[in-house]
Image 1 (spheres, rainbow, N blue to C red):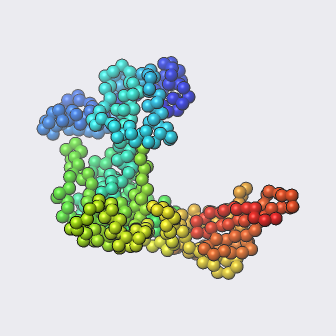
Image 2 (cartoon, helix red, strand yellow):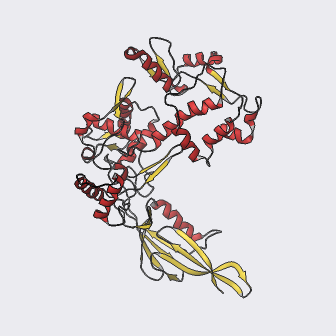
Image 3 (cartoon, rainbow, N blue to C red):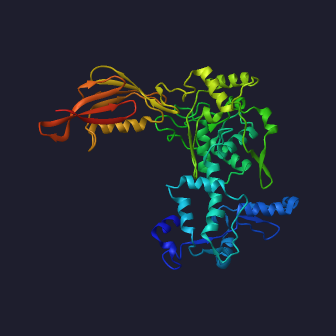
Length: 477
């Protein structure tokens, strides 16, 4: 809203459309049972707790997340004293408009990185002022959200886990989860024992994601999918409700996260409750085994999956070289060991159960292709799809090729599906005059462009491996 108002110019006026909107409502985020002490921000609470030292254990602390946590009596107290709980934004000062633009503009990602790197730890807004300056809002409050957004959205490079995944794993280890438990029940246990403060639906989604094992998901699923946890048909969106599915720790989980390490990890504290560690130390780089995806504020990551067996081979070579007198950093050593173990091109992305090809396009860039078998001049068998091209989505694409649209000439006559939840099998019959190798279908089709000597001819090239139609032409008269 601030960014929109700045772009429209409304932030320049003291009175205007935003007068009744741009208010900061302050409700207590922490309450205690002994005294009326109500810090409104986490850094403020941390500063208060540090100031009283060991006496902090004498207080009963409650975390308020939104007005929904407040009782009716507390809500009446808030709104009966708006002078205390409502804080207006100040007038726009010089440089404030640029700050708002920096915080929200899609074109200023690098500026947001610089901003977050330069933040002062522990800073928080002073709500005792008459009006909140935009500068303080951006640097001392919006910054807290941005940092938390990155922490929640981008996996840790050490263990490859986001905080929610780490909380799930911690709770499973604490419970010694060897017997099946309903996902909905596990979510409650995780919330209780790891101080999870966010939505239950998000937590059950995290549990389901950690157990999925279809092509394109995990190479090493740490939880067991005991029930319908989703398939490659819809990319996991077809998972059953958390009330109906069960899970438990896979045996491999304690092989990757060895129990002997538990005693030396640094565990976090949430209001006196010991919760998950700041990170685990797996024996395999899980960020490479299962990949890592996330979009935060200023930063994003997308790491593909790699073959655990190849990673093990490379790690063993690195261990063997550990005693060598090699004058190079760890990155160079990793590249050298990978070349020795898997070839000069190094490690390539690999997904469990994927039958297609992963080809090197250029340094650090790969393309995943499905697989097509030519049956005769008009029929092909599609028995693998590109990674994360789900069966249901591809079916919809094929249906579109039967009817065509403004941009694409209909080239498919019909198709028959013989898929399962784990495999792909579509037999397609085309209207085109010829088939080309590598799963591409091509035919000469009339072009809408005319030339002096008649109607031009364009070449329509359909790549069934990727689901892309290329129109190159005209190529002749």
